[in-house]
Image 1: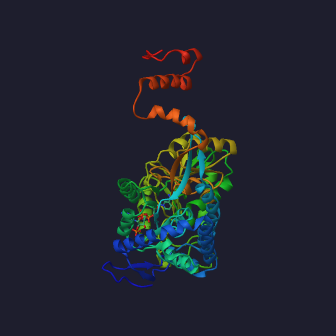
Image 2: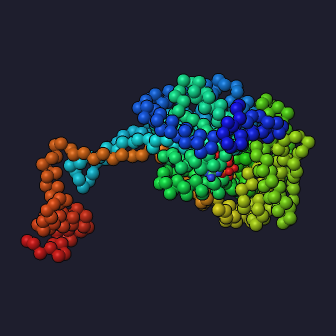
Length: 520
Ligand code: NDP
């Protein structure tokens, strides 16, 4: 990797597991973003003209190159601190599945259709879908593929070119993916990665024709505000505070197993992870016992994140995230919660390691139950019944994802009352891989969706082209009199009667003379 030739200091990418410097990359800043967007704009017409089949072929070549590349896994594991099973089993799997689905979804999203008007029967309207132009993707550090390059797939397939600005914390995987894009014989300017800090992200929002942003609520608000001022479409996928509800009818073994995984996958740094757990009093003792046992059994360590053998948790990607964990832990302990597992940093391991930590006896006013923790800490609160679980589950400014465990009919009914863009019943997290369904947050968890046909078509703009049906030209001359100069009182009178016939309910009322009509 090269260091920055420009005025901005280079970005140092450090291994979360060992603290070792992995690489320095340039902060390309506003100038780099401007160059990339200009090149992407120039490349856009040819990319659109290639057609969906040609674009799909390019995406498949890219996917094959990624699947054949050992370096991409190494890079992903090294810069994120996640274990290999999470790198391959979540991120690479997701990208492959997303490309598979989106090729079909793009076909539907781009399909032209004809709309036949009721009123202007002489016309027909053709809906044509065109790409927006250049889409800017801005991603967070926790999933260097899933919420970064993967978000380029939909925009690219419907004919946009893409400039991606990954997080400064984990830019190396994105750079590798851009290299694989080029090696797959794909046009370099169609998918570009620009490395930089927040200001580079802001510069991207200034220039592109559409924005896909994943990150914190605070930054998402700024990005959406600026996109709003520029009047360009913007999708924001922001934070989560996902509740996990255990009803009295739940299978407790399965619920405990799912709660452990969904709380501590990638050390708790996932937007849809379990952030807070509510268990109904009647089954709380047994559930807490099962969950405590599972969390205490988790194996954490850096020894060989690439092999993935022997460990369940890697390092936390972003050192500052552990400060949030410690703040939430101290706040909860000060308010009466108790530690059932974990509870401290593991400095002896050398990197950003914090024990998977389970708190019991939480109450709703604790920060751990209200603010996004986004790290290896989760708390359990006991509730009287399902009604209280619902009230507290919905008591959040965020609404990204939720989980409920219980007898199927009861859990399904409960799910419908949760204020959350996604709910999964008797399972966890795998709903992110259901790419057929739109996924987006309610409340302050964001606006717009990824996935589903909805998440693909939004990267197009619709052009409605209205033409005359040739055979109906004579009728059209009659209709045209209503909406043309010179205005004529007799024509207006005919129009009034016609409106009554078309829209007024009741036959006798239809036939009655319109009010104010004095003509015979
Ligand atoms: P941030 O909001 O800090 O950063 C996200 C991206 O925005 C980074 O690339 C960052 O660059 C860039 N950025 C920073 N400032 C600006 C700006 N003014 N204009 C444009 N871009 C800017 O989020 P994190 O990286 O800390 O990610 C964690 C958050 O992401 C959590 O809240 C998590 O819940 C959320 N998330 C949401 C998901 C969802 O699907 N809803 C999925 C995954 C995560 P840089 O890093 O270089 O500062």
